[in-house]
Image (tube, rainbow, N blue to C red; front, side, top):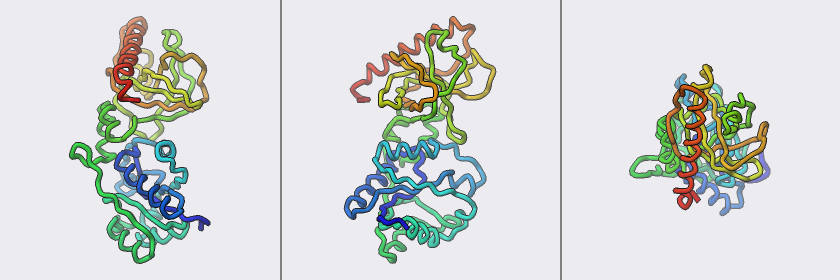
Length: 304
């Protein structure tokens, strides 16, 4: 058992959207009021993958979720549980008893639709009653709505698949992000006068609509640069079906290989297309760069 009390938000938190933000802010408030440490308990893989035998394409990897929770909400204590068959079959009371004992939990915050334990028999309301019997604080956060729609990771996934980054940003409360270590590419961008940093989406993470985006790339030193990012298979230069993420940083020169970078997606500019030759591709890249500059200049006050 930990030697300090925790106030804990429990959930999967895919995307860390504005609905999740309500849970996280309440957790921080309860922690501050009781001298506890604000914490998050999540799962490494989506429970639905095992429960229903499918694969939920995620908005973020576990590392990505942890980064958002820490960076945007200042909650550093993030605990991931490995969701396996043992955990899936655990009765809900046993799950809560085990968790509260192991983490020394004094307060729990969950969403209105939270369910857990064997066959999902544990519900938010059952948890509230059980915590009351055990002398543990509990908040159940009602649904958060935007434009009359319940904010959900499922809806945000559909926005990302359609390239609707500006609408996704409203529901997320922040830009959609990809964080990765910069990899060595084929260096064609340098030949075309637009050197790029190359990244990939982690396995199991949703790949947005293929195309070109106005983005911002944030570096390890805290600096950030407007950029143009292509998500896709580079049909003009490659017959490879693997999806790559290539970003050209505007007004930047330097070598970023091996460094971590974060790409923030702001607006879809155009679909990925196959050009007749490199000259045509190069001309389009120049137009894309100008379109990205115009986007950030036009929206500089709104995005500040």
